Length: 275
Image 1: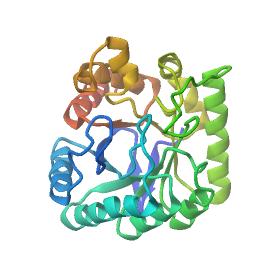
Image 2: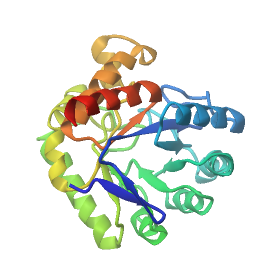
Image 3: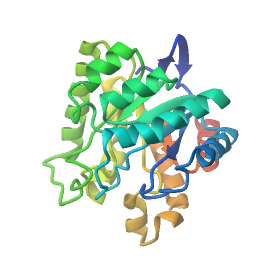
Image 4: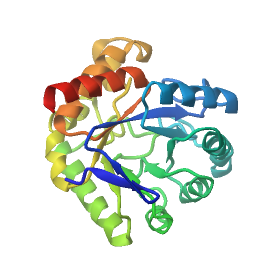
C-alpha cells in the first residue's frame, strides 16, 4: 500500500499516521459552525491546531452536515479563498480544501492550497477529476450516497462494505486514468449511512487497504458516536479518541479531526505500541 503523497515537489510520508485539523469557515457546520468564519478567528484556530501538532489543515466553506442548506459557488469562494491566502501568507502549513466544486478547487490551489478533499469523489462536478489532474495535486476521494440535504433519509445497501469498496476501487482507477498521481480514499462515515453501516465499515477498515492507497478516516464527533452514546456532539471527544485508535489499528493513514491535541496523543500512543 502506498504510504506517501507528493506536496509540490516534496514526498510527504504517511508511514506515521498524520493528523488533519478541521477548519470550517461556515456558519452552520455541525460541531463548530460560526466559530471561525472571520479571517482573524480562522488564523488563530489554524495556529492553535498547528501548535498542537496538526500535519495538515482542511478548510471547508460548504457545510456537508446532514440537512445542510445549499451554498452558491461564489459564496463558497468568498469564504474559502481569503482564508487560504491568509494562512499561506502567515504560516508554513499544508492546506487541504474541502470542496466538491472544480472552480473552488482551481482557485484554492492557485492561491496556495496543496490538496483537494472532495466528499463526492467527482460525482457532483464532472470536471473535478480532470481539473485535479491538471493541477497536479493530491486528491481525497470520499464515498457518499445521495446529497447532504437528504442523504440520511433511510439509506439502504445490500452489503455496505462491498458497495463502498467497489465504488472506491473504481474511483481510484478513474483518478489514475485521468492522471492523478496521489489518491487518498475516505469511506465517508455518516454520508448516506446508518450508524450500523458506519460501524460495519470501521470494523472492516483493514480490507480497504487492498485498494492500495492511503486511507483517511473522518469520524470526529459524528452522530455515529454521540447518538449511540446518547450524548451531544460537544461531549463526543472520548468516543472519538477510541474510534481513532481503532481506525489506526485498521490501517488509517490520516485522521481528520476537530480536536488536534488529543488525536496527536492518540497517534503517539499507538505508535509506541506498534512500532
